[in-house]
Length: 102
Image (cartoon, rainbow, N blue to C red):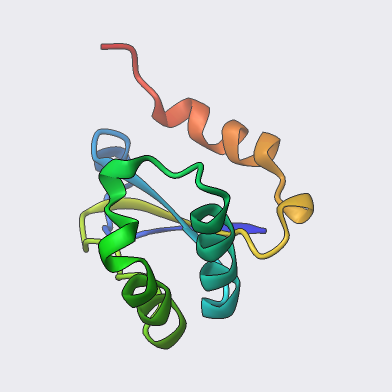
């Protein structure tokens, strides 16, 4: 499931502004996924999990992820609690008109 909402009034202006996509899930799910990746040893060593891994897992459980920046334009929140329920084709259909060749 996903939803998009505009943080500005002018629809034409929105087409030229930033489109943010944020993924979210319950804090416990985020912690579980992080720990699973961490214990698998597949995370890049640059993440420094050996120094801060447990601290990050505790932060995910207690506070959750940080809030996205407040920017003008579209903000799309994607619930990743259950990847099977995510309709990526609908999201792509929504995004296509917003993408302009450079």
